[in-house]
Image (tube, rainbow, N blue to C red):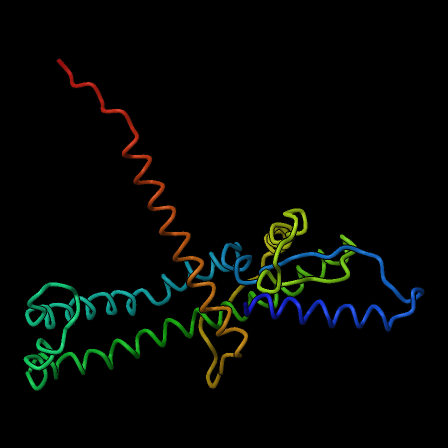
Length: 228
């Protein structure tokens, strides 16, 4: 219902605008659909930046993994039903213990490590966003596009209207050097933070699907004949 309401409202506004526009002023051209986070997520620039982050912040990543395992080992003895979380009864036994105090300290350290890594990723995405804007404008010009819509605002569109691959090709054809260490006093833009959250989700889903496909492929492989 919410989507329908938004669609009807947009259609009403579009109809009113067309009715108020002289025929001579109407513009002819193509309407396209583009998804910035989905395009950025698979760009060479971001893949390279993420690889660089894994190298530059290798010590932080290792420390994050080690402290996460340490935290889990401290909490696990209190998880008597083994469901991976503490219920009310288990929490009562856990609170006030030495382990709880150690976990509190670890949570602060984990938060600092995660914030540093996320800041590097957001900073990288902020730069790739600028590259995306340039590539999008190039595709718009080359394909006589007069309007670009987001998938969130669509009920249906022909696949031919999707220009994600064209924009991605334009980005990869003109790679940029992405810095992964934010300068002193840098503050991320809201647009970059929102894009980061979407990109992370897209990459996680893609990785999970790839892993699932690999597992299915392994299961479908015929058993090797045993030697005599």
